[in-house]
Amino acid sequence: ALLYVDNLKLYSAVKPVIDTMFVGKKLYWENVKPKNELSSASFVNNLVAHPRVFVTDWAAMRAKADTDYYTKLWYADIKQTADYAMNAQMVEWKLNSRNNVLESARAAKVRLVALAFVGMMEQNTAYLDRAYEEALYYGAWPDWSGMNSTFVTAQIMEGYACLYDWGYDYFTKEQKKTLVAIMKKHGFPDFLYHYVHMDGFAGEDSGNWNPVCNAALMMAAMAIADEEPEKAEYFIFLK
Image 1 (cartoon, helix red, strand yellow):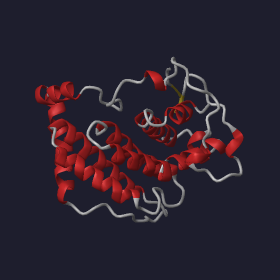
Image 2 (cartoon, rainbow, N blue to C red):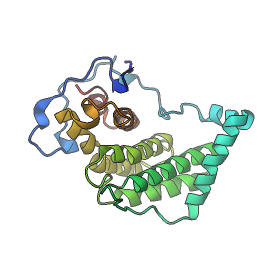
Image 3 (cartoon, rainbow, N blue to C red):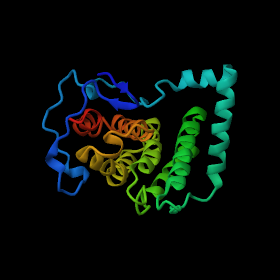
């Protein structure tokens, strides 16, 4: 299964044909009922084991951070963010002048990614524990966008996708179930709405909403593919 970019629009190997089953209905995770059973050759059934989002080998990543000058500088910056987050107050849900929570969502994403990344790089579970604590806090926000801005939802969805994928072998079954439940509640329905109506980032948007939103959706779907293979395949290829 391949992905390609067409004028800043991300598609699967075939441009998605949208199922109209959601039109006029409330868009919840439970509404998604893929019609096709997955074959052994399906994209989801051939994903590599966790981690699979940006990183596939932590030992190799640690070695590069030790030996490559620029990677070392990059990692030092990420660790500084994670170290700050360890004792800082949680990011608060706060509407901006545009009636969305973009700044809050971005700050939450940065912290989730940094804590999860450093936890795996340092093999220090304290960072992962803090990341999970923050994930629970942001999961209790009223929503992840404010005034229905999927671009904002995408910011924090990326953080949850990375946290879930990178911490997969550390978190308990119940913790992973909780993270997935949060994404089902606050994340996936927001994306689905636009795919149903083919507007916003899923329509003819030529700005950065399309790659940002589609990337977040694909990252999250790939992260939870073991638990929800049919729905992950559906979201990745919209079929």
